[in-house]
Image (cartoon, rainbow over all chains, first blue to last red; front, side, top):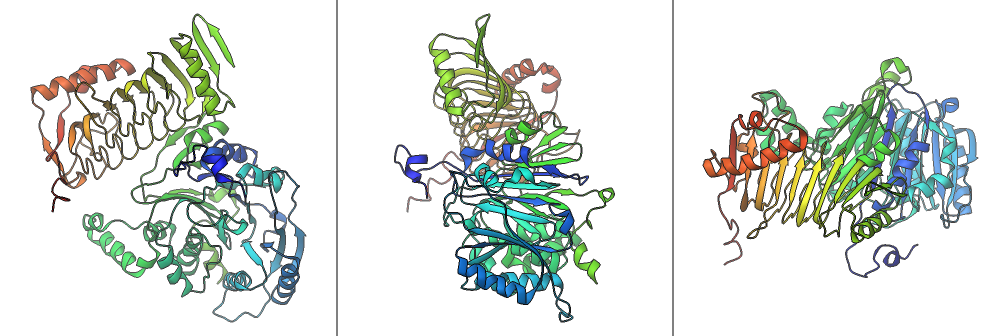
Length: 382
Length: 252
């Protein structure tokens, strides 16, 4: 680990002025693009982070394996790998497996082993358990086992790449210049009060949901206890993890539309609710009553993504920054506008969203890539 | 990266680290330069900080956070948008933004003027203050987001609402929360619930109107607007109802 005092605190005072950086780019027409611009954009915000975490999520990544779950697992020991692979063989049909390509670089120290497995869920699941439910249960099983193994990406046609380092260093390490996707999100970390380790870098992910976050979730304890009742187990030692599980619960399991789900995470204040028309007021009250334990308290700016959608959201009083750029079918979200301008000189529009109100990028129907809208995947299966 | 023509120093900022860029600015100003153009600016922080002379800096691109922080005299013109913390604790000088600005414009400013042609983000003018001859002024052509003038302790905030459709309201809430000094002039509707509890609302008297006119004329000159047509609209004045709203809080 770097000596933070030397890097960031040359006057040896107690104040380090930094913040996480978040960046997202989506082609709403579904065209897959190289991450070169995204890597440049997040690197432009280098000074916000401190090299203790960087990561990316890429969608539309594995068209040749689009129907298989792509499990990405980091192993802290060889024995862990052996034991976990045995359990993968018992629980899934493993269609293909490979080490995630990486190049040795000076910046990345002591990386874990990282492997990817394209798997199918075996037939004959109980009626009340979907394939997605099964995968979530198995991910939780591996992450809570004593095998030093962590599944940090488990969706279809997408993957997370992350580790300890600056984001541009992580990109170089994982050879991200070789990948193409129609959504890219990127994160540079400045850990505030949780440890810097490979699993604690952003994005956090379950199935194809990913979350990158600037801020602190002070409701982590309440959120975590609530999510545990639904089988989600927090193992990554970082507050942001609860957001990934919360969106999976709200949008996949409970089938809430995105516009409703964000009103759970960033619920309108009670005095705002009182000024709403009656019907809207009833809905807002019901959401706060039913899902009070999933309210995210504390400062946050997040970019949430899954197949087909990229969403930007901040806390209700916007204690962390988020800015938006649009150019044709391209949607950009960023902590700083300069990072967007660096990779797109002639934006059609640049604007700053209101706190608590989501910015939503959706695949256009004519892209023909994915069912559009929340919960669509779950409904289709039945 | 530096090129001097007609006594204008031209700097191509592409790929230049913010510390090096600011060092170059300090050096140029120390050498007596009075006009600097920065091109290809992408997010370099603190531009204009630590400069104590009346130099004009024109920026083409998107300057980074804390533009003009602690600045004491220069005039900065941005052809583009400003990010967060523009004019942080500035003491003297001007910042003119031909676009919008992010959050906390002019936070803790203690002097100087900031003119933003379009909108501003959250908490513009937070904890601005004034003392004797020092009086910071921020004029905003568009609208503002929440906590406009939060904890304001002095100076003048002017919100022109020029991009609001006729009869429409500003959306900002918690305007002037904790305000205990200074004054805010606003064109455009604001409902009571949008105001902080410490804020009073009144019509402008002649003295107010003269202050408003002085700064609107300056604003209009920066961006080629007609000052009279701006001043023809109705304005309201927001003021702190108490100078020490929490004075008794810790007195027991």
